[in-house]
Amino acid sequence: MSIQIAPSILSADFCNLERDLKAISNADLVHVDVMDHHFVPNLTLGEPIVKRICEVTDLPVDVHLMIEDPDRWAPEFAKCGAQSVTFHMGATHAPVRLARQLREMGVKACFAVRPAEPVEPLFDILEEFDMVLIMTVEPGFGGQKFLDNQMNKVRRLRDEITRRGLDTHIQVDGGVSPKTAHIVAEAGADVLVAGSAVYGAENPAEAIDQIRAQAEA
Ligand code: DX5
Ligand code: ZN
Image (cartoon, rainbow, N blue to C red):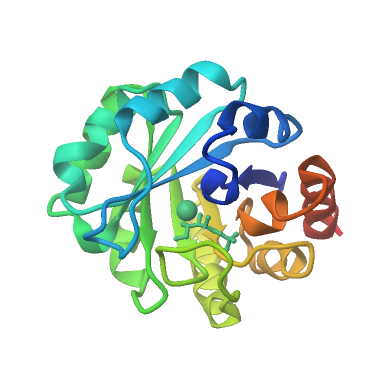
């Protein structure tokens, strides 16, 4: 299984975003965290900035919405040029309708579950999604400690995807570093988000290579 590394610009310098996007050209995706001060106690950026990021970077843009009412707003982010849009299951009213709407717009549809949310109730609608995000921290902030108690969830989801012959990606987000990359990959995740481990490093590109090497080890 090929591993994709998705640096989160939450830990980048928001006044030097173009520079910091260029610094991760060896990544597979760029992960953009959208927070609204309601779904999570933090506020980041909205559509105009996501649109500019999509224009400026050569990497596919993976938008992670940590906002209320994604049913209303996710399509607006899809229009910005993102490759994938992830919304939180706990915030959406009609996940299947929203996933179908995103796919009709040519965007990959993904849902996220928080650490205390089970993934099994969503098995019946897995085919509607291109990727599932298992949070390995409580959403809202970068630099938190990796929750290894989420690895059984990743394993159960990987088993289900394999058993049904699906090609759904499993993304993990939170506390991923060269130290934890092997653990998440071994559990079955194939898209690794890393914020502070990439942008907190002296050389972000080297940090990406290290995370990839550990995940593939
Ligand atoms: C947290 C965000 C993450 C965050 C991860 O709610 O969804 O994408 O940037 O940061 P690290 O990798 O520092 O845990
Ligand atoms: Zn994220």
